[in-house]
Image (cartoon, rainbow over all chains, first blue to last red; front, side):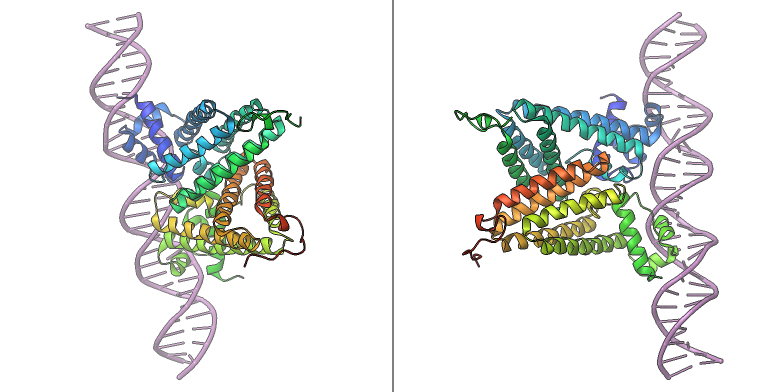
Length: 204
Length: 204
DNA sequence: ATATTAGTAGATCGATCTATCAAGAGCCGA
DNA sequence: TCGGCTCTTGATAGATCGATCTACTAATAT
């Protein structure tokens, strides 16, 4: 049996991600995690807020590793982005449109009501953006544009998750993925686009 | 004094949009709306669910009118999309990052927990997508691509709202807006890209 | 063997939640 | 003036919330 604390965190990640912060109760978490209510306050003496913050940061770390793995395993950054959207669509379908972004629901909910949790979500988004930016820069894109492309790509992904879960289809993820991939490929220095093309230097 | 029912709906739209469904209580709504608790059940005998569904559909209608107005008042569809993102950024700043999309928070929260409300959010998104698609088609884009472009643009907008509220800046909206606008301009028939060019008739 | 700590367990607290209810206010036509 | 209707009001029910508490078990250290 997995350690109680880890079991609680896994369950809270699932439930907070699906139903949000206010929509998920402590009793619901311990019931699904097959733990005692007392255990949750033993491991997270700060109560629901602490549990949620640790959930946000833990889910964020896991998703960061996924982002890095998918981008790094692809042949190039354009393909990596394409793969990520495809994988996201598959995951959403596999969970019957329940699990998409692990922190988006919380992020919207707490943005104006809980500064500590808001900051936690912002930190996680920032870590994802940095991972993407770094890889875009490695592909020859200038830092400022890399940052803006990352913001754009993550925005499209997050919004596509919203639409997909509401509509119960992955049309939005498919559409967003193909356009985002095209934009990123377009932004790459010509010499790195798909295959090598001779005699082309990046603008700067 | 505005009628009680309208006052309740205005307040519920604000609170549900900012804090989500579970995070907003009936007492909170009537307190802010300066109404009696009983009044809410007089006008919405179906309780919180009915109030939320009507809130979703009412907010959706208002936002639809905003979308249509901004797109129709612009000189061309590319400019209209650009204007919409700019206006969205201004609105988010003006409300101190509280009000962005009126239904996104609810949509994520109820997608897996309340089928009636999920469908309401899906209907609203669909109405926005149709409005956008229709105008893209009028600008000479084929129906299928118009649909995909609308999905892409709305995804980018919704996701940018998530990031902007979490990060408390409008970088994501700015970035998303400029890339989406560029993609849409790129998709327009050459004769319609910038200003009118002579000798081009719409396809139908 | 004993002391200490880590973790489990669930009864229970006060607060808050949604929802109901009976009573009354205000208005309008007869 | 009266009856009938819409709407308002807030007390209250009953459930559930997060959180606390004591008591207990298991494991480890001394």
